[in-house]
Length: 272
Image (cartoon, rainbow, N blue to C red; front, top):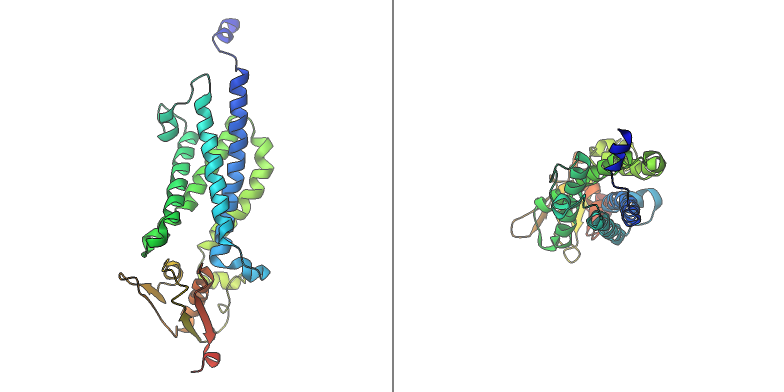
């Protein structure tokens, strides 16, 4: 009985074994660059790396990591189309649960497609002047979460969980920590030393914006909506003298501005 059951299971061909090795390697590399994309993006967008090290984080690094993530993620998915056993088809790689796929495959499909959508919209976002583009870009956090779930479930299903456990935890932990910090309120970040002026009385400041540097990305509005408002005509309006409670928000917006167009100066220095 056992022999007859084993007889109907086709052995894995050397070709399929090689394809699966390529898929596994590209998937692990995509997992690594995906986590680095998130980490680099948060550090450069918030200016925290400058706060900690005194140096700027080049936003171009965020784009490079995202590009590598998309390329290796696409290789990981497309490689399954070359299996001789025909276990994966085009629909299974494009549609979640197509052909009765497993939950881990659905998480990978949705996560990769969402990651692609976020990356494409970010590349053409130069003309977007409202907050919707910025909010949609933040959907990348959800995409990374789905892809991480896909990676861990896939490693467990293929018996490789013990192999990737240490490395997976090592690169995922800073990504998760920074994601949590990203959504914390300014007063909590000030207590952690990532923002200034939140633990005591905030010093009054004057805000100025360089119109030549400002590209109207609306990131400042996402960080401090009570201070910065991007109008429908593309004009940026802001409070020149924010209140004490709004100073930490203005500081966060100045650090998040990718063009470094926002300048905060003490009222004594600016000349009341």
